[in-house]
Image (cartoon, rainbow, N blue to C red; front, side):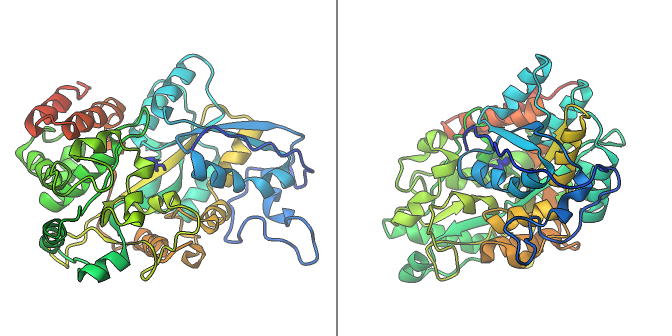
Length: 459
């Protein structure tokens, strides 16, 4: 999901849960010098029944300490997140207690302002992170974390976790959002080709609708974050309708939210999302998108009730266990086309880990989560991608995710980070989400965008 996502997300990308392993600690006491490496975390020593704890020595030894971690990550992804700490806990003695909430964006503010902040939080929006820093809640990242980020991430990714020249939060997972999930067999049976331009995409859409089937399915309900999947649609359309320079001006508020170019981009998204002939396959009419869970939005593809679902690479985690995600399988994904086959603007998203205290155990977990070891462990578990340079793309759980990792690691790619995540949180995680929900529910484009424009903070 935005992660929301993050994932929105990233969502995404998952209920409250805790990892409570009380295990033997091993390792050294020095945290400062560690920058991680490329060896997958938890690699077992030959002949051993447990993990190779040498991979965790830099994080120190702790006696039964617990570090709380708060995020928007729930359900399957929450279980997968917890799995990444199993060997870390055995080797350091630190129990990571994770709580995932669909109300993360609201609750993290309430908890911090009430003096009840977690040790660490996974922020799907740099804008919300900036707010927590400005309010004095999130503290600068320790040297070990910054060293890991300098080694494993591009300057652009580090900049998203940097506020007023000071580094606060390391990137965690990353995603490519410009994907369309589809059924290869349904396309083959209908004689439809994977489109490579926007006009071809609309032709496929029209042909499917003319056959009596419903081309698209979607869902934007996500608890307190309801509306974020629709903002991703708008951002992808701004890139295709107006280009990267206008996109940059839009998220920086150098042009108003209701600029004619943004109106046109929103109407382009509406040509699909607000057309009852095109949506919402297997669920209802276009307004049903507002009440359909993000998690469930694409599942009608598996039942042949819709053909396409625009959603990020992290949506792979939502397919039921046993789903064959491959070019000849149950579902696969293609790049959301640009105006021409040569134009490939890429919308990306990610999450960032910020700390509310400088306790040694908190810093140890924060450092581990910023390392190449953690990134490879999480990618190998499945369902996600990372832009960490240490990640081995061959560990990804599907060809879609391998492609996403290659795109994320391509230094020449023309990419833009999720716009709502970069906007002030009052807009990006507030009026933009609620405005898009009203828009899906029938409100007109101009009035919704004007309302969002009026909500932009004065300073």
